[in-house]
Image (cartoon, rainbow, N blue to C red; front, side, top):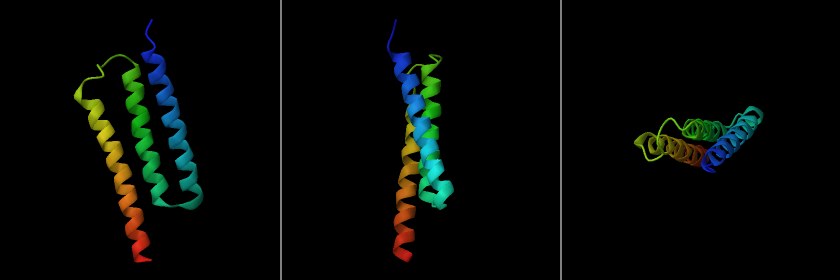
Length: 88
């Protein structure tokens, strides 16, 4: 029995917890920074869930593309936050 599906399940759950944490922070502060981070971790959670289903090989192209999207969303959040801070 492989340990990999358990790791994918744990990563799915942890990314979802982090996404919900940032969503709660966004609902309290209405700062877009937290919303972007919530979206990024939601994408990562979905990606780990699909990988954990063992339907698609991990070395395929799409997992890397979803990770790239998630990291680009985080980059957009950081740039957006810095630009808004500079205008203030």
